Image (cartoon, rainbow, N blue to C red; front, top):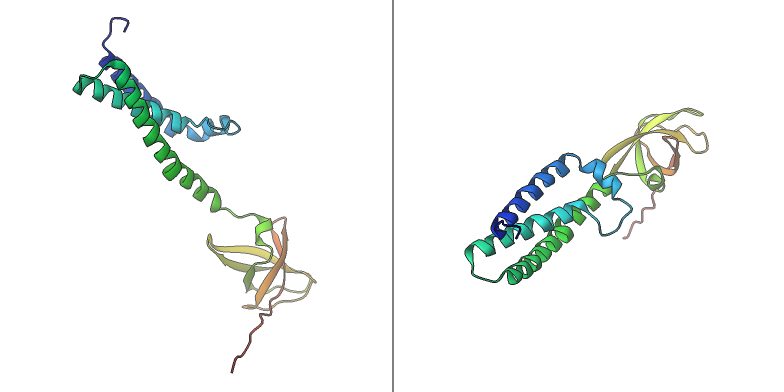
Length: 177
């Protein structure tokens, strides 16, 4: 093609796609924002498809006597399969895990915490909440402006502006004899 062997074209494509992938890894946060609203366009998936496809086509062209069209078809099928596996079993779990480590103020409502700095009447103290994300400490005040002592369990009623509004937590315990 154009006076150049197909093996050379595949090899150049492989090297260029590899270099672009490295640049993408360095600047992925910027580029991910540019493609965020467009479904099915993920630079990581496209680059992996091109890299795997060109590597497969190069190897098949170099070590087999198959026709060029057959090599392209087989390389595309293999690249599609491996790219799908990478997308569904690596990229999606990584992205969902990344977003699940954060919490919002709305998600704190209804959770139980423990007072580590006593909460005075009409004042602020501090509580800790143990969750799957680790231990979160938040500024707290009494929901009904009541005082709450150290080491008391509290129920978070609402959270806004970095402060949680809490009440003493009274768990129901049943004695079965």
